[in-house]
Image 1 (cartoon, one colour):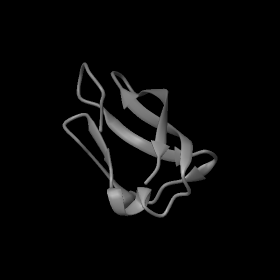
Image 2 (cartoon, helix red, strand yellow):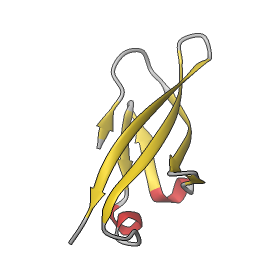
Image 3 (spheres, helix red, strand yellow):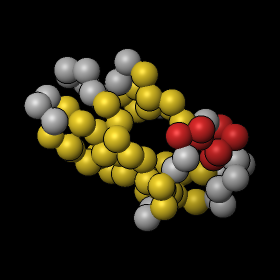
Length: 72
């Protein structure tokens, strides 16, 4: 779970490395991103780099990069 603090934001895109993540595999509500466990279970073990493209303020897009470790 990742929380984007500040004014209400809209998640415009989520990528795992260079691949878009289907919107069925995560939720973004009240500035909180939750990547579904069923999606993470399909990933190989190890560190994954996710890029969140978030629309804030007057339409500016800000990219946040997070690392998620997938394991047993």
